[in-house]
Amino acid sequence: GGIFALSLALAPALAKLGRFVALPASAHEPLRQRMVLMRQAGEAARALYAHLQQPEARAVLRRYGFMLPGEA
Image 1 (tube, rainbow, N blue to C red):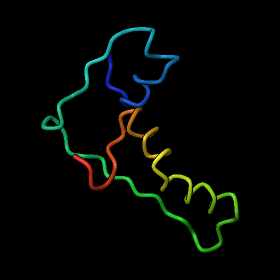
Image 2 (image 1 turned 135 degrees about the vertical axis):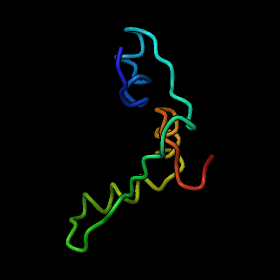
Image 3 (image 1 turned 180 degrees about the vertical axis):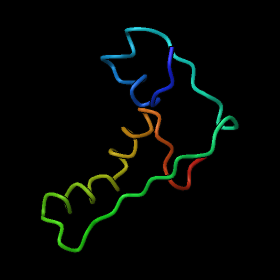
Image 4 (image 1 turned 180 degrees about the horizontal axis):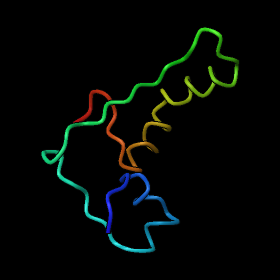
């Protein structure tokens, strides 16, 4: 057993290898991460930043266990 990211447990390649139990939110402090786009970022970084704001990308993040800002 071990503790690891829910996103890994939900990944298709790993999900079929065993079982997992998500820790209840009350058992830990939230891990708050932010996305930053540096001023000198290239076009690829800007495109990724814009893509991750789209509903389709947000749906993928949710599917793999990420809670997005403004969501419970």
